Structure formats: C-alpha cells, structure tokens
Amino acid sequence: MFRLGEYQNLKVAKAVDFGVYLFDPAGGKDGTDAADRVLLPKKEVPEDLKVGDEIKVFLYLDSDDRLIATTAQPMITMGSLATLRVREITKIGIFLEWGLPKDLLLPYHELVGRVEEGDEILVRMYQDKSGRLAASMRHLYDVMSTDSPYKTGDNVIGRIYEFGHDFGTFVAVDDRYSAMIPAHEDVSDCRIGQVLSLRVTHVKPDGKLDVTTREASYLQMDEDASKVLEIIRSYAGVLPFTEKASPQVISRETGLSKNAFKRAIGRLYKQREITLEGGKIRLNKDKH
Image (cartoon, helix red, strand yellow):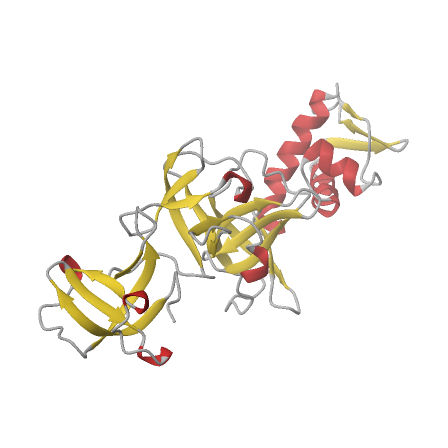
C-alpha cells in the first residue's frame, strides 16, 4: 500500500529505460501488476540498484498528478510541521518551496494571515479532498510539541504563526514548541512568520510556554516609565486613568500589563516625575 506524503521502503520490481518500478513488499504484492507499482525516475536511480533491492523513497504527485517516487528529501512530510518559503502568490493559492520540483500549494482557505512572497511561514501538510498534498496554516496549535527543554527566565527564539485575538499571539519556539505571547502585549507591528527574541515567563503544567517580548521587569522598567511619561504628556500632563483602572483600559491606552504599568508609575513617582493627588496622575510641575 502506497502512502502519499511519506517515506517508504519499497522493492524494485522492474527496470525500464526511464527508471525503475517499485512495489510495496509489505502489501502482499509482487509488483507484476502495473497498478501496484510506482516509478522512480532514471535520474534518481542509484547506479548499483537492481531488481529485488529495497530503497527508501518519498511518494508524492508530479505535475500531472501521477504518483511518483523520489530519493530527494522534502522539507515537510505528512502530518509534520515545517517552515517553508513563499515562492509565488497566485489567484488559486500560495505556492511554497519544499525541496521538490512541484511546489506545494497553500489554499487560501487554509491561510490565517497575510503573507508575501519571500516570507517564511510555518505550515503542516495534509491531503485535500482531491487526494493532492497541500499545506495548511490552521490547527498548528494542536500539533505543536510541548516537551521543550526551556524553563522560566530562558531567552528563546519564536516565530509568529497566528494572531489569537483575545487569547494572545501564537508562537512556535524553535519552530516546534507551543508558546503564546499574552494578549496585553502590543504586537501590532508584527507579521505572520516574523521571528522574535522572547523570554519564557511561565511553563504550564501541560508543557506549553508563556513568553514575552519584554525584558525582565527590572530591565524593562525604565523603558516602560519613559513610555508612560510620554503618554501623560500627550494628555496635557494629567492622565485620565490611574493604576486602579481595569487591565483592559491600561492595555488599550499604554500597551502594558497592569503590573508593568504600576511598576512604571512607581518608578516615575520615586524619580519625582509625577505626583499622585486626588486620585489622579499628574506631571510634577517642579520638574516639567
């Protein structure tokens, strides 16, 4: 039985001028029937390969949708994840480079965000209703690995593969481990496929990672304080909300979590940049 999109060990049934025909010895067939054979083109046949020998090949459909074997190593196989380069965007879909002559199609209905030619995006492989191999950007979260070697405080590299709206931003650490940037962090200037330097803030019981684009709080505080100071100035010196506001309001107005905002306000107060009077945050007139 031939398995499309996978590697198989097949046996040589017959040699012809344009290659060799292979069959599956585990399928109870001997390769005498043409329907039970697949071609390995001549240019890929090892010189010492002969009838009866076994060879490891990958099975896919050629440009004429015929099942064919190859000794080339594609960048992705059935059910796996891989980062592939966008070669061309067309009316019928997006074509990805995957190491074989025929590009892999990413249909528009399997797209989760805008991509451009040259982008490197994370996808999985599946077989569509017509039997062809195709790529998808959907449901990657379900097949990510959760056995990363990382712990809280580690610096990691992650690729954005989906914006999760209310949940946060889905990221693949090392292009394989499941991770998420919290929703309150501003990633509006980021794109699908973008690679970020991140820090692990929490390892969940199921192995998934919480990560942040921000430095450790003691390093990030000065930058946050400067940001909040500029926001106060933009409101003519009086902030229309305080650290007691809801996390949603603080995130919307500052792009910071409530805790980060409170730390920034504390830093500014100690530096006498602001005053806290009457439930309002004001610029210190003695310094501004």
